[in-house]
Every structure is written in structure tokens, then in C-alpha cells.
Image (tube, rainbow, N blue to C red; front, top):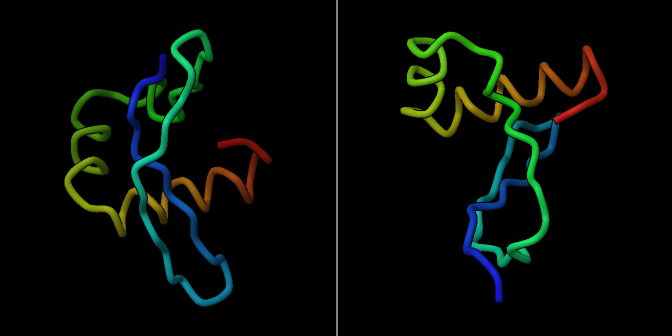
Length: 66
């Protein structure tokens, strides 16, 4: 059994991104990169795919995670 999740992929150089529905096994634990954020900032990012991808890209560049 699996859960459906949205998967995002993007190009840091050109800023083009793509989203797709992906299947994740139910026993696989996914890391929530937005979990440490205050609720208002999290909701702000969740309202825009472009802002979300920008945030994740910056997080990846600075910390090597996401």
C-alpha cells in the first residue's frame, strides 16, 4: 500500500519546476522541510508553488537538505 503525495523537481539555474503525483510506501517517513517554520510563514509558502520551490531551493543551497 502507498500514499499519494505531490513530488516537486526544479532546476536551480533556470527556475523551471514541475510537480507530479507520486506514490510513497506507507512505512516510509518523509521529512517535512517546513515543520520548523512558524505557522504564518508556512502558510505563506504553501499558497504559492513558486515561493515554496524558492524556499526549498534556498534551504538546499544553505544546508544541503530538503
